[in-house]
Length: 392
Image (cartoon, rainbow, N blue to C red; front, side, top):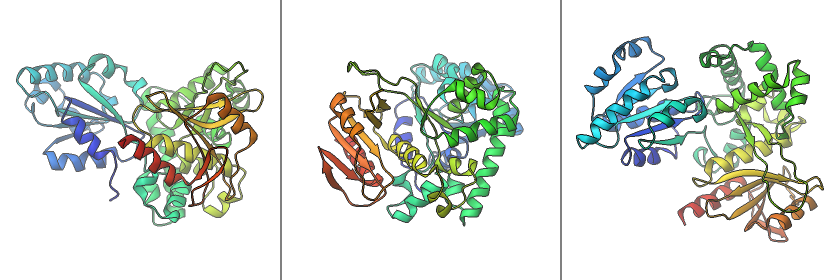
């Protein structure tokens, strides 16, 4: 079992607040993590996709009141949004009785935007965390492991499969399950084949500036429908819209977000890329590497850090502008080359933005300067820089 970096964070939050909500895409490892923690704390586990467990909650206030003061894990909480008012009442009761923390661990497979009830009902009582698939720190420091993470993605069953072929089949089944079973649970009546085509289009367009009108024309739907498809995949934590940084630099800026399929393994499964040799010869290889680096950096960045990209009509561009809560920023260029050299557009963008640090991430292992204050680093080295910054 690969130890998840977020586990001690969840433990800490449970010691501070009444409820912790842990969200992430299906199969990212939320249940495994929760059960591991539950064994240590003697928790009660309820799976809201199980008819037997849902039956226990026919009278939720009565049932949960019997276990007040004991950690209760509620898996797939989005299946029962009506529980939130009940949890609020029980949390307030526990507070009056002197048990004000570590009461509930809520697991969900959708973004917070789909769970507004929790934000409104449990305000001041819940702390939110997101569990991503495996990241570069969790899989090990060997280059072969990082390459496997890039090819297969970070979903545990995909990454840990006994062969690339079995990993690809798992991801293809995962995609089919989402399309045919999971998405309809959220009330979206979308033909599975239509959404598959749309998802595949996004994989072909990995890292491109979002043009909803063009996607709609290619799919044969109206713009409103295409925008709704994007919103759905973002809400399910499967797609990322990376916003553009809107700086007052007196230049014409590209304002539309860039769009990425978040897990590189899903990109490859959607495009039928089964092994590294096929990937390296595929036209998407550069965009896939960029998306992989962006997602990994954002996964390990300190809490509160935000990611943007920057582009002007004159060609100035930064692949990832990382903004920290203290107002400082790092400019990050991504190159799939063993001799990385930032292009003139990157230097022009840095002149506009004046970031505190400048990096170019490449597939090698050495770190060295490439001029004008830019440091060439591996993905692992940049991740270590981010963790050290968080500690500081």
